[in-house]
Length: 349
Image (cartoon, rainbow, N blue to C red; front, top):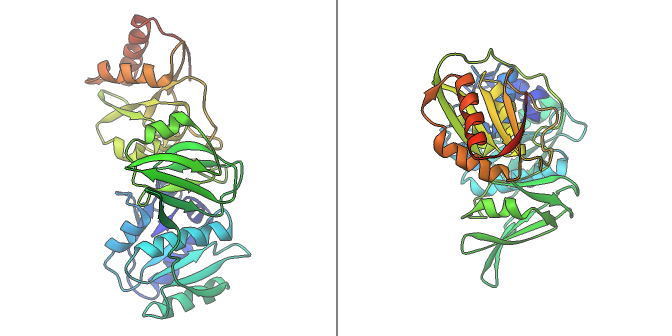
């Protein structure tokens, strides 16, 4: 299982697959929306299954294989190990982690002690000329206190964004972040300058099983593999502050997507450009710049509203702009509805 885009763009995934193919049959699956986008960019869809996007521990647990291998490239070695610690702690079998294999501090980690995975771990370590560590998952990343459950996020870097289940909730202020949940609601965060609107959007959230990520969604600018835009009539998907669900929000009959929120419009537009799906973005200018140099399908339309939030404008549009139409038809309908509601806006491509 490969997690995140960096292990794909660096070539570490491709190299790992080639090595493992010399040891037996290989099934590879992707973890994370930006990872799936990277696999499309690198032309690896025929080798890596991107049809589903389960959490890493779920994806690994579902694989019927003799050896479970996690390929990752964290922003630092410490953050990569912390990630592997969480994943390995949730998988009932031993896991071999290939971490930052092409970096000077790369390592192979055998999580769970000596087992049948040992030959594969040693082979990977020798091939990449990196050290081999044997570690056991930490038992203390989650705990209960005074009626609250706490999730500890280690190796965060001050200044970087923090996401919970794909929702941006604030800017990291401390290398260790603590997220507290009471009765299914995040009640407070420590080590983070919280964005209250983001916290409100989380809704019911099991912080123990939630996907928590700190840092940029993609570390490097990339040349996206863009398909020709989809023409003709079709459906319009609605992506409301849920950019990480972009690939699963469209199908072959989707001609465009209504994206609600500045950062959602950037991320969803970037991801859907790989499928040739244009977006109609509803923004209000409060973006946090979570993605470097986002791509966008040619001809996409962006509306920056004034006098109301993108949440309000987008929710109203999503209720009435439905059915089937061409991209230009949907754009015309969005313009007409904004004008009917008396919403001022700036339109650009």
